[in-house]
Amino acid sequence: MTETTESAARDDDRRQPHEARPRRPRLHRAWLVAAVTFVTIIGGAAFNSLPGLLIDPLHREFGWSRGEIGLAVSIDMALYGLTAPFAAALMDRFGIRRVVASALTMVAAGAIAGVWMTASWQLMIYWGLLVGLGTGSMAMAFAATVTNRWFVARRGLVTGILTAAGASGQLVFLPLCAWIIDRHGWEPASVTVGLAALVVVPFVWLLMRDHPADVGLAPYGGTYVAKPAPARGAARRTVRVLFDAARTGPFWLLAGAFAICGASTNGLIRTHFVPSAHDHHMPITVAASLLAVIGAFDVIGTIFSGWLTDRFDARRLLAVYYALRGISLLFLPVLMAPDVRPPMVFFIVFYGLDWVATVPPTLALCREQYGDDSAIVFGWVLASHQVGAAVVAFLGGVARDVFGSYDVVWYAAGALCAMAALMSLVIRRASAAPEAASG
Image 1 (tube, rainbow, N blue to C red):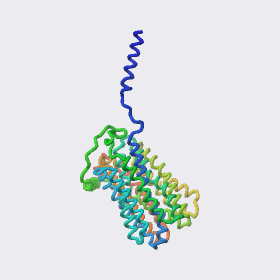
Image 2 (tube, helix red, strand yellow; image 1 turned 60 degrees about the vertical axis):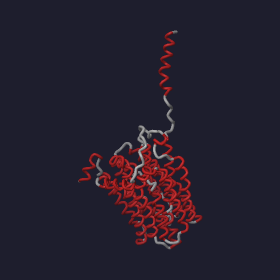
Image 3 (cartoon, rainbow, N blue to C red; image 1 turned 135 degrees about the horizontal axis):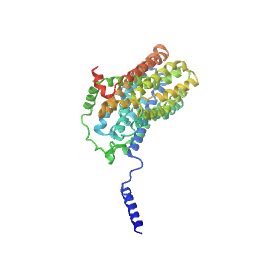
Image 4 (spheres, helix red, strand yellow; image 1 turned 120 degrees about the vertical axis):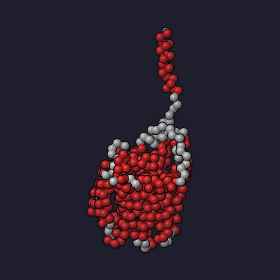
C-alpha cells in the first residue's frame, strides 16, 4: 500500500510541472500577420496586371504611341523602386499600418482617376506618380520588414510566400481584367483594380501589427525582444544606409543583377508580352491567360526558391536562375504564334517558376551582408530592379515603334541575364565584403 502511494505521488510530481506550463497558441500570431501581408500585396499589386493589357486599347483610343504609354509605365516602375527604401524607413518611424493603408489609398486614387484622363501627361500623373508612389510604399521592402520583425525561423520560406503574393495577384486579376476589357472596355478594368486596393485597407488597419512586442510575443522561432522606439530621421537614415552600402562591392553586384532581373520580368514580359503576342495575331484574352499561368507557377517557384535558400548557397542559386532565364528568352521569338502550342506552354511554365525566384536568395544575401539595415538595403537593391524594369518598359515600346517587332528586345534581355549570372557568382561572403569594396 505504501509503495503504491509513493508511486502515485511520484507520478503527480512528474505531471504537475507539465500541467502548470502555460499553453502556447497553436498558431503563432506571426502567421496571421504574414497572411494579412500576403493579401495586402495582392490588393496593391492588382494594378500591375493592367499596363500590358492597356497598351493596345490606349493606342487605339487616344492615338498615343507605345513609347508614350511605355514612358508612363516606366515612371510607375521607377518610382515603385525609388520609394521602396524610404518606405522601409518610414515603417520604422510611423509603423507598418499607417504607411501601408496610405499606400493602398494612393493606388486606388491613381487607378480610378485614370478613367477621366484625356491627355498623355495625365497618364504620367495617375499611372506614373500616384500608383508608383503607392505601390513602392508596399513593395518587397514591406515583405522584408514583416519577415525580419516577425520571423527568425523560416525566413526564407516566408520571403518566398510573400514574394509570390504579387504573382498571385497577377493570377487573379490578369484574366479578370482581360475579360472586362474585351467585353466592356478598359475603364471598368481600371476601376476594378482601384477598388481591389481599397477593399484591403480595413484588413490592414484591424489585423496588422507593427511588432511582435505589440501583442506580447517573441518573433516566430526567436526570443522576446522589446519594441524599439520609433526611428526618427527616416529619410536621412535611408540615404545614410545607401552611402554605407555603396562603399561595398556586394551592393553593386546585387543591384546590377537585380536591375537585369527587373528588366527581364516586369519591364519586358509583364509590359510587352501581351502586345507582342497580339502582334502575332494571338487574342489578347489568350495572351493574358498565359501571363496568368506564369503567375500560377511563379507562386510555386518562389516558395520553392525560399525553401532552397534556407539550405543552399544563395549566390549559386541566383546564377542558375539568371542563366536559365536568359536561355529561355533567346528562344521566345520563334515560339510566338497565333495559337498556343506546346513549346510556348513549356516556356510559360518554365518562366513562371523562375519569375521572382531570385528574390529569396537576393534578400538572404542582403541580410547576410548588411544585418539590421538589410531591409533598407534591399529596398535600394529593389530600386535598381525597378529602374531596370522602367528602362526596358520604355525602350521596349520604342523598339516596337522603330523596328516593328519585339525580337531585338528578347535577344538583348537574354544576353543581359547571362551577365547577371556572372555577377551573382562573384559576390563574396560577408566576411570578405570589405575586401570587395576596396578591391
